[in-house]
Length: 443
Image (cartoon, one colour):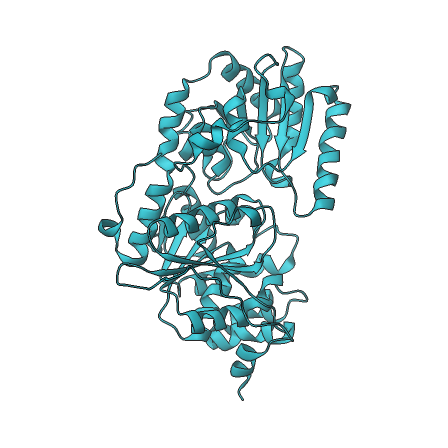
């Protein structure tokens, strides 16, 4: 048996891949099997947008497989039952390290530093063999992936499997802000590998025009190869979610105005700058700050929440700042908040900013790369403030609290980022099926 064949059949003692399939599903010319690759079911923005897109494909009559490295996380209970969930199993690390070379022997010079010679290759690489096996067995019409390592692995898996599956890879976060200064040495050598490998995909998507510009500049991929498609953020379920009750006493009608922050508890979101800006606002007027979000695990979440509370205490606003953790329904809180603030250092297309606008909540955002400038139309729908500018964020918060835009104006802008528009564009670039998508009322 060849090394390639052994790699694609090795099991490490694991059970066969579980196939969960919608009863009676039969593929036709208009009904496609679409596989969506996810690292896990955590509550991060990439996972939320990927799951929303998968659900939208299913709602349009396609058979959808969630192909997941780790079937765990805050979104596990939110996976629609009609989606097939296919957990992948790991292979040996030695075999995993060699598979990219077997998939693309001519790519050896660019594989050396980020894959073959690095002491610690990407953790998800051990799932490459089983991803290739999934493609050979299930033969989906299309495979979608997001984020650099999953994108690379999707390309290699398709080559190893030898299937005609249409492959769409996408970037969701500005690579120039993540890769060149990464703490992981291997990531600093990814751009040349991305240049070669990404162009073997059928479609390359960025979630904003600015992110597409950044990806092309960093990797040297021709800009015309990159298609910008906004994330599927606004769906018809928002009105129902907005109406759900909230269990936080600060959101009651008779309470001081609540300023809302939300997102992964990480350095990227720069919540310390938001807290410092809030302290300046609080010195001049009554207000409260609530930051929803979690980190990569329970221990890290508690550590980050403790840091938020400690900083608030040092600034003298400890009784007016809360960090409750993850919420499955952010819309209900957004609709009741006086203001939402995005304080990020970088983004791709921040869905949480669009979600807030979709509920009618006024917004303030840093002018970070990339996305906020496109979403807010150069400040037309909310102030844009330099990254890390405490005084600027404080001033913008007070400006919007005093003179908020009408809620219907914000909701109207958010509809440009609807699920329907996104799914139409994805099906068009994958299959040329824009005309075949049924008309469904947008949110």
